[in-house]
Image 1: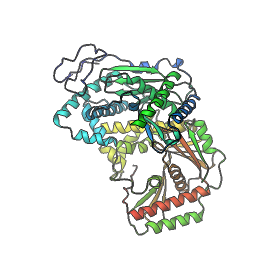
Image 2: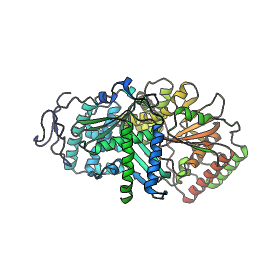
Image 3: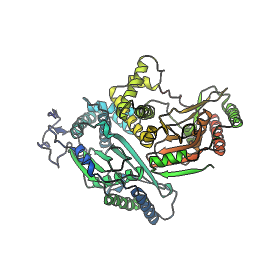
Image 4: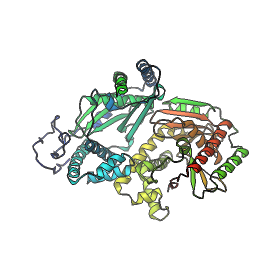
Length: 290
Length: 278
C-alpha cells in the first residue's frame, strides 16, 4: 500500500513500523491521528489456515454446551423467575467498559465501512460514505442523531479518526473473496432457562459456509480500540454463541483492532468453548446485581 | 392447538424431514370458513375506506405498531433484495449471494430508471441512492440470502425446495383489506404433495410466534398455496418452530385475523402504505 498522506495536528505519537503498543488515536481524543505505512497483516491467511487440517464438526457439542448452561443456570438462579437477564459481551468483562458516545459512533462508522468493503466498495471519502451508510442503514437511530448534532470541531476530529481507522481496515482486509461467503452483522440471541436468560452478541464479519463435515466458519470482531485483556473473553463468547446458534463450532475467531493494526486469532477448541460457558455462568450473578 | 415442534439448530436434513413428514391431503381452506372470514373482515373494516393490510406481524404485535411512516432503509430492503438474490443463486444465474445481490439491485434500479417502478417503490429509492448506500444494501441482502440458502439450498438442488418464493396475498372481496402471508421458501416431499412453507424472522420468537406462523400459513392457503405445515426459522436464535396446519389451526388463524381487524377498527390506527417491491 502506498503511503497515505494523512495527518492532523502534532506527529509526536507516531513512530515508524507501527509498534504493537502504538495507537492511531489517544483514548477519547482524535486530534493526533497519524499514520504513514501499514504493516502487511495477513489476517485472512491466518484465518484460512490449512483447509485439510481443519477439525471435524462435532454435532453433539452444541447440545452438550446448551445442557451444561441450562444446568448451571438452574443451579445459580433456581426456578426461573419472570425477569429476563440479557448477557452481552460487555457483561462478561470483570469491569464492564462504558464507551463514550463519540467512541461508539466511531465504531459504528467503521462497521459501516467494513460492510461497504465486503461489497467491494472502496471509499475515497470514508467519513462521508460511512455517515451516508449509517443514515440509510435503518439502525442506530440514536447515533445517527448524535452524528448530525456534532459541532464542527468534533466532526473534524471524527473525520480524521475514521479516515485513519479505515486505512488500517483496508490494509488488513484488502479484499474478501465472494466464495468465502462474507456476512456482516451476524446477530445471535440464544434463549435459555425458559427464555429468562438471553445470550446476545453480534459478529461484525463471518466468513465461510457452515454445513460441511469440517469446521470452516471464521468470525471476526472489529474494534476501534486497542485489544486488551477482555478481547479473549469476547472471542470465546462469540464462538459459544455461534456454536449454539448453528449447531456447529466455528473454526477460528479473530479480533482486529483498527487502532493499532493488531489482530488476535484463536482456534475454536472445546476448551475455549467450556471457558466461555464458565464465563457466562460467572456473569449471571453480576447481571442479577446490575 | 395443532401439533408444534421446537427444533434447536436443526440440520437441513432434519428440517426437510419435519417439513414434509406425513403430509395431509385436505389442506384447502373450507369454503364456509373462507366466507365467514370475508364477511367478518368486511363488517369490521367495511366503513373504513383506507387501505389496510393485515399480516402475522400485526396479529402478534397489535395494529398500531409503527410510530413513524414507512421509509426504505438497508434494513427494510434486505429481505426483498436478499430473496431475489437467493433465487438467482439457487437458479444458477449467480455463483455467490454477493454478486446476486448486486445484480438484483442493478435490476431494480434499472426498472426504476426506465419508469417501470412506482413512486415509493424500492427500485425508485435504490435508483436515487448514492453508490455507498447501494453497496450497503448489497451486503445486507447477501447476508440475508446466505441465511436463507443455508437452510434450503441443497434441497433446491434436488428439486425438493423452492427458494425465494413470493409472499402470499389475499384481497378480501368487497373490502379494502389485504391479507399478507410472509413466505421465504417452500419444501416438498414429492411433486404434487402439499408443501411445508418456510418463513424467516430476526431475533427470538415472541410469545405469540405460533399465532403469527399459523396466520402466514392460513393466508398462503387462502391464496391457493397448498400448505400442510409451516416452519418458522429464527436463525439469530438457532430455533425453528414447525406447526401443522390443520382445520383447527386454520380456524384459529381466522379468529386471529378478525380480532386484529377489530382492534384496528377500534384504534383507528393508520397503517403504513403497503411497500412495493419493485
